[in-house]
Image (tube, one colour):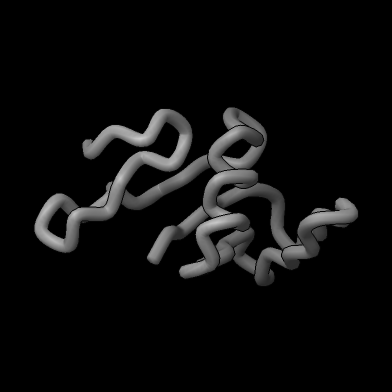
Length: 66
């Protein structure tokens, strides 16, 4: 699970992705393609959680564990 923050009610429309942030500017997802894309949108869209080492979640930007 990845949690992101940006402007409230922000919507991101791209051919490969469509996400809508809630009224607090928060969006959560488990979709690996969404996570990979949203990680590249920093600093405008900021990941506010940390990947979980116990579950083996990897940093999808470079394929390494955090």
